[in-house]
Length: 383
Image 1: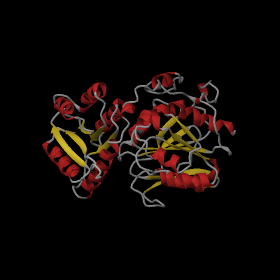
Image 2: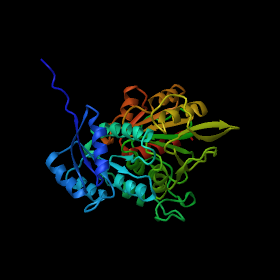
Image 3: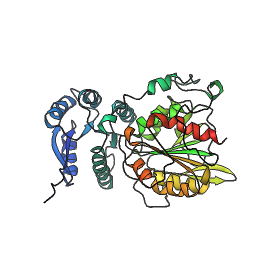
Image 4: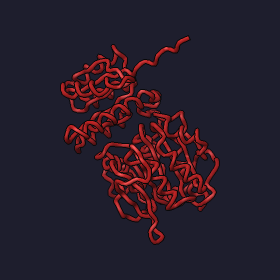
């Protein structure tokens, strides 16, 4: 009895540029696991073809006539949630529009080539194909995460002085006690010195659900490695900073880590932690102790923490494709550090957390809405 061959992933391309439509078709059709079903010149035509063709994945430009990418995305998520990958230019307007698209339910972003057509296009092609394949495995029920009580969580945070959005909190005004409201479970054997979060597909929305739950007087630094194209992590950090009681910003090479601050790894670089004269400092650069496709890499961040902090590391793995973070988490766990994994029910892509769970490394497996309170519980139990 012969097995039915696996059908290729059906993709709809929505872009107003004839050149980009042709380029994307050529790139995607070169992979036997992907088939471009059709193309559309604007958001309205894209919606019509989406209804007729029912693709598994849509690639969407942002700036288009008739109906732009954000308007089309909002309509798609309203009546037929489908994994959408945003193609964006690395400009101020482009990055802000991309963050808005991720809020509306887009599952990932690919930066359009901006330099010479050689290596730049090759990297773009590899990134696009990888993300289309990951998007095909997205949990459709999680697109947009509209059922998460993020707004309630954010509204509960006292205003932070100087915050342009009026959201966030100042540690000096924080009055709620540092206790977890989540279900009690296993906690670390050793005092937590640092929290490190790794995530990929679906990560920006997940971070907006978790980080606002950490109070402004949080007693340890927090690191974040989010897979994103260069130029996008700075605006992401700014967006998160407006939502959180903690200060959130991109990490800077050589700076000393401080409690109550979230350091987002700059896209295109590796973020590692070193201990110098008893202080934890950031090392931002191109070098990595292991071969990796990711910049930043969760594994690289975790491996450095295993050396610099060891048993005092609390590692968190959330939604994302692949297994980045598993190698580093093994080293952290070998030194009696602690591991939290997001449960399958809330992941946009249950790849990175699955790898941690399947390897037997996860001390706690919790849904997204409980990760923030679980982190607080783990940090405070040993203080």
